[in-house]
Image (cartoon, rainbow over all chains, first blue to last red; front, side, top):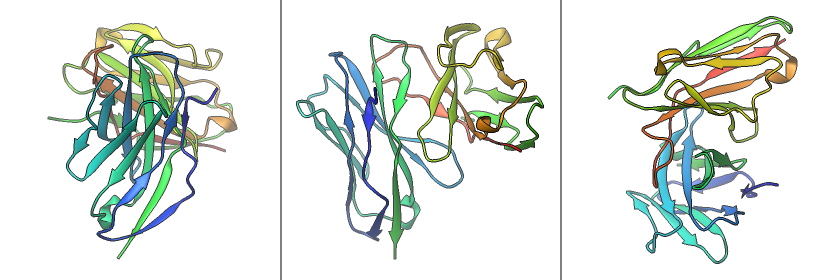
Length: 115
Length: 116
């Protein structure tokens, strides 16, 4: 069964605008972690932000914030003030803490920032 | 701090040939992961090592894939013989410990494999 769902089609975003990338997840565990990674065309997966299931506040890292809605099982990424360098694939991933630390990834969202 | 190193960056082989990829994790990272990323999909874990022991290889096609992490530092992933469907990016990642709340996996640049 798919544990991470990312269904948005490719997105074009105007430079300096904000963009929200949707991610829903499926787990029966109470303890888990949610991650967002960026993958530019060079191929490397770059860690952006982490949210623990017990964290009461939404995570923020610079221009990245995670809109965590536990009851809805969603963990949307918000990128504020988009830059041209933000053009990339973005992957949502989940780690179930009582498992083996395996990350389950979604299929990704393509973002293209236009000037 | 140096990141995760991988080589080669690109490899083209014919089906039924063998190929090997190398990974050197971030210094001090006990856990090492190999992922396969097929075009248009997210990475899928193939194998996970804790030091030099295998923690999880449930998704590794063991009839053709093998991996080792001698001495608990660098690792090699081998495919023998390769099939067309093995064309993918092979990503290596490492983390400090196996299970820790908030533990992050750091990825290398990947090896792009094309099987003809």
